[in-house]
Picture 1 (tube, rainbow, N blue to C red):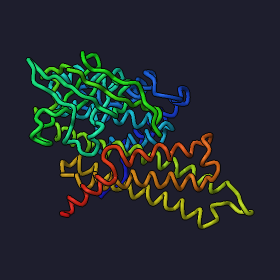
Picture 2 (cartoon, rainbow, N blue to C red):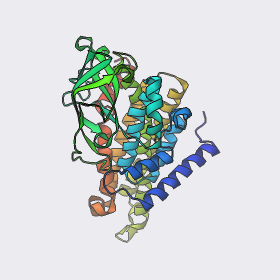
Picture 3 (cartoon, helix red, strand yellow):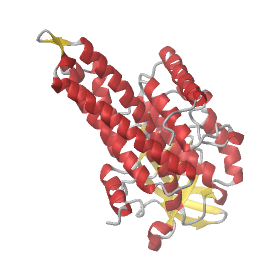
Picture 4 (tube, rainbow, N blue to C red):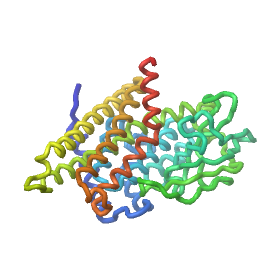
Length: 377
């Protein structure tokens, strides 16, 4: 088994990391991302990493995509921007590329890859978070298409999005087999995107509600077939739970570097604080979590590229990365002490940005349920 990147892969990752540093040093993200930021990501190829080249993507497999996202997460100090771009790609662009009609792919994928368009994943509802088989948003048949009605309560990128991938109940009696996936453009009559709401972290990524009031969606904008929305969603979640969380590997790497430097230079009681086992032990745990999580994530992506059933590996990877990143952020706040609690050093931002990783894309408890099921429990 080869654990190394090829020289060409490493060079591509280093080039993206340097380009990200250059772009965002000149144009830092201080609030929500702007169209300028988004187009810059498109120009760097980060919005279409795993999309076929014929549509403007880079055509990479899951493992190479994860390597590029990790480089992005390491270089970009705005984790909210990394998250926004990854949610756009894996939760929205991937299902359009995999399940969209030929006409939809030709019309939307080039703009989604270039940064001309922003996409939002409209799945979560007030009463449907982990249980996505009971969606209140419903779709009724009409001439040539469907009428969607209801509200999605938490749509990342929602206030800025031009395109939404959404899911609605089309057969209430069929459970998860009664859910259908749609791609809906913001200009569709009956669609209203809410204003951004406040949230704990990932501040560069706006989030809000999306309401459908008899919103007409033509048949050609169904993703997959009627009733296959559950399969479409799980396909996108496989990519999201693996490759999106590569961005958190980059964050963990950056946080480890900052913690090592602080432990080397901060002095107390006449010694570097890194000389104290209470401090060095925390740093060692951060390194252990990072390398363990990276190996699990790479295995999950490797299995995806082979076409294997990666359900177990993806769940293990998502759980390890999300929980590991949060634990390391807590350790860093403790290690930096008062400076870790103050906003000017940015350490507390790591804590705010890692906490939601244990919630979105399936909570940690949901991952444990999936793992238990795969183990036969």
